Amino acid sequence: MQEKDRFEQLVLPHVDSAVNLARWLLRNRDDAEDVVQEAMLRAYRFFERFHGGDARAWLLQIVRNTCYSWLEKNRASELTTEFDEELHQRPSPNPETLASQADERQRLKEALELLAPRAREVIVLRELEDCSYKEIAEITGIPIGTVMSTLSRARERLQRILSGARAKEAS
Amino acid sequence: MSCELAQTTVHGYFDGELDAVRALEFERHLENCPECQASLESIESLRTRLRQADLRERASPQLRERLHRQLRQATGVAPAPVMSSLRRFLMPAFATLAVAAGFMIAWFSLQAHTEAARVTAELIDAHVRSLQPGHLTDVLSTDQHTVKPWFDGKLDFVPPVSDFAGQGFPLVGGRIDVVDGHNVATVVYGRRKHTINLFVWPSRNAEPLAGGSGSRQGYNWVMWRSGDMQFCLVSDVSAADLRELEGLIKR
Image (cartoon, chains in turn yellow, cyan):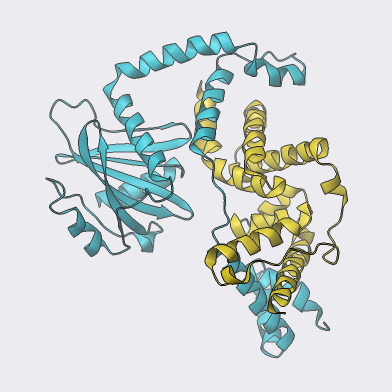
């Protein structure tokens, strides 16, 4: 029973972060909540192996692995196709709504979803979850020395997609 | 691009991940490198755009409830050490449903017995409700001199309202909830990206509530009495954070 209380206090409070990461990796909210539920069950089963430290990073690592297993089983093509901006032409948005805030959100969302999962996850962890490089390394298994270059490439791609979209809108 | 640092080090610098020596070195380089300046600006604007667009997703109340139920089921059975890993996962979901149902009934009736638990449950419900879009505040202000007078005339008591932005708990606003059939003043604080609700109401004499803390459905709560007022903090932030805010409010 004590174990359960410890789990409730240390791990459950990070459920928002878990859903956020899963939502962006799977690009779908319902799938994300299902996968998070499965990941939480796993986390609970593995909880005896958690010896203190960063509970959020520990949970997100399990969530990420569960997401990738899910993708392999259900949408394996997404993991093997490297993103190529030339091949992904977005439909032009309605010019009347271009200026609106909702449209800005939509534009960023689409751009993020165009990134390959391994680029997308570092952006989500750094910019939306405010994770340190050490945490990103722990969650994704990327060696700590290469977090910076991975993040640099991911940001550059995201900017390229966004500016490409903007150039198209201007024309 | 000709400056190599514009693609690598500038990111570590922007993210605050360089050690002091390297950061200083880079700052010196940055002064004379237009490429790195442009790169820094563009990373910064990307972050601003991403954060302003409010792209972070949160768990639905339904998922929280599902997790809570699942956790209760999982504790209904002590996992046998030699089970295969597949069965270990499936066991709590299927085979123990009956046991779990029994546990749930026992759990609920136990909870029903204690008034404190009932009020806590209501407060946590109020907290969850407040997280729905548009439900968090009736008066939205970071200024305590706006929030405090707002409660005036709406309640027959005055809750203490202070801003603790300097200590990492910025005031977000206030609203009125009904808990246990009575009006309760709710002061809303932020903690990084999380929301903390402070519920305040005049304590009634026979009330068995006083102090305590605990967690439920993934939310932590801390309750105390001060003078003739009852206070309760509810949030998904850590219990330590709640204790810290409690200390600030009591001061």
